[in-house]
Length: 68
Image (cartoon, rainbow, N blue to C red):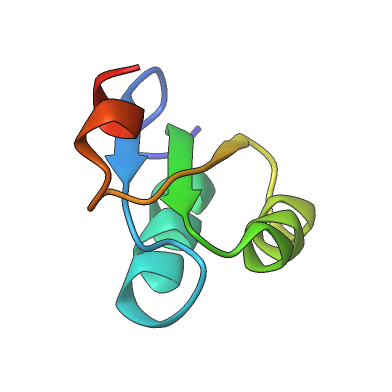
């Protein structure tokens, strides 16, 4: 069991870079991660890399999409 077992984390820009690294680190520590990005392909690759990651394509610049 990791340090974040039972916790949930919401990570934006999770398709690459710092967002991706953060999502993977949280998942490896046992958190359930909700990862968002505008790149569906990058999210699919992320989800395949670690258990406990749920993904949603989302453009956080789109207020209506964020509120939905």
